[in-house]
Length: 99
Image (cartoon, rainbow, N blue to C red; front, side, top):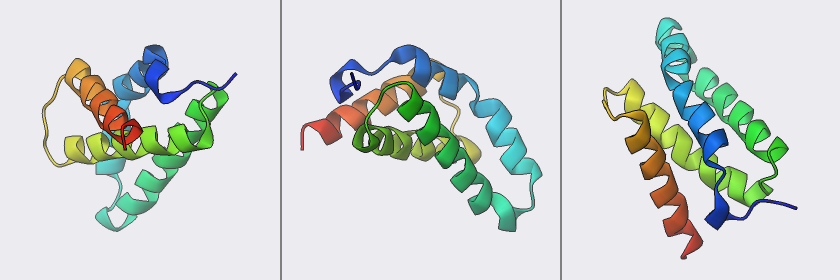
């Protein structure tokens, strides 16, 4: 059964968020002209992870949009805690589900 938006598997999201420092470092270490390619690779990886965890295509896309937005924020200097990032992702996806 596919996971709906309202039952976000926190462990999957947490694993992704806990990996942000390593992903951000890898992106920052790349030449700036390669950052979009690195972000696209991260996006594809996150979508695959979510889909293999049972999330539908639509839910995976919505989650990844929120995840990538938070990752871009971290690259831009946001200093949110992991829990704050997870809460932000959940809030953004919940808002989408209400549309």
